[in-house]
Length: 266
Image 1 (cartoon, rainbow, N blue to C red):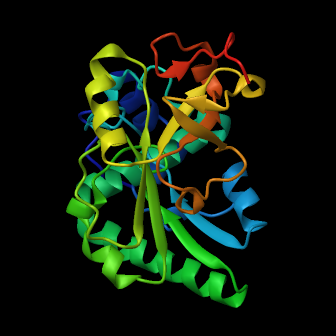
Image 2 (image 1 turned 180 degrees about the vertical axis):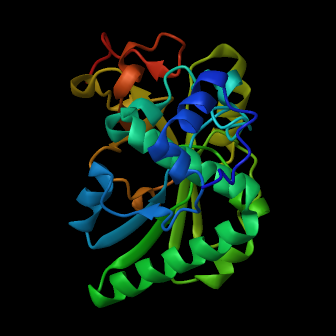
């Protein structure tokens, strides 16, 4: 079977791995059959205990697919400690599956949208059957402007609560009542004007701390709430810090994206 995706923008080693592997060359000769994962994230599983069913789209962030999917990654330096390496994301099969979804989005947008609608319909049906609240997080591992690429998706599913984390403080989403955004912090000096803009806009701010057991009561002069208790950000108030703790290679980050709270009071 012939590979149907343009792999020319991928790093040579990655491209050759796909082309020389019978399994992966077969994967990349087909469209994905599913885009949204439901039980693949520990925090969304916790959310089910709060009667929320969440579907998440995971892809390849920054320039890993050959096209930049995270426009602020270099300024915020979050590409260095990206959580794409956390948990199952470090497994090759998982990486390849996410890469195929990302290339599918980039190269076959019409077919991608059709499959995404099908997946959200399935989540809606499943949540209705279980009497749960349906939620969808489209930017599981990148920072894409869905309000630009696929704005009609929000009107198609008014009963679904969409939400994302973003490092872009001026996204035009206030007219979309069912799309909730949480701004993602970085302590990198060049990024601070964007942090200030997000705070001025009244956004809640997600902050990754190095140590789980040293989360401060306040940060940026705002109350800290536990963000690892679940992933249900739309239930959090605005104007607070959502405290997360570092995972994967982010544990060793020194760029400023991860806040070293070793000596912070709790």
